[in-house]
Length: 160
Image (cartoon, rainbow, N blue to C red; front, side, top):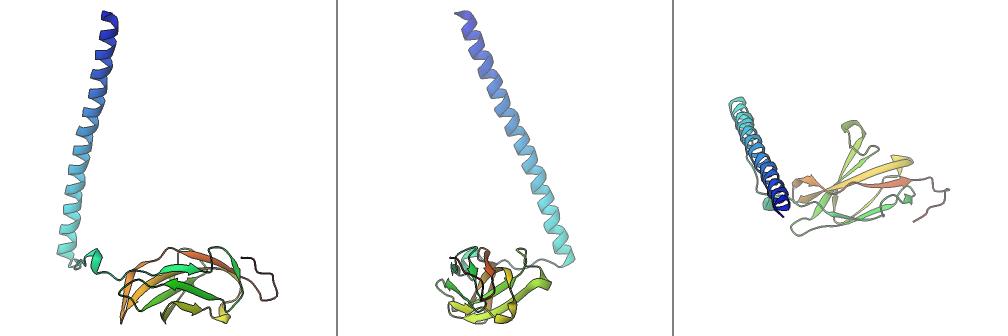
């Protein structure tokens, strides 16, 4: 069986070569990325754009959206419901006709508590909403997941 032993050793050597090559390329890529990151930090430092970092644990947590369920049809004036996490007393609700919440299409509403009755002047159509947590006067930067509802005229059937 000398032929089988040769095939085994050839395959083993080939595998080790592939793994070794990957490790070398990974190290080189990491080193280049670290240098590029250092250059970027240095450029920001010299440009005066360095901002103080806040530990993740110290940030204001976004609320958890609950109702209405994603994608259901609702009538104007429906109520949005969410759950506030510890350390928060309200939310900033972002309402938009686009899922990207572009500035010209987004309405911001500051709310105390865990509910908001949708303004009736929003009209009908698809409405996207997400939440930012509030603790006193501080509004968090992190947002909840984006939810969507279909606002229909009061005369149309509502499924849900």
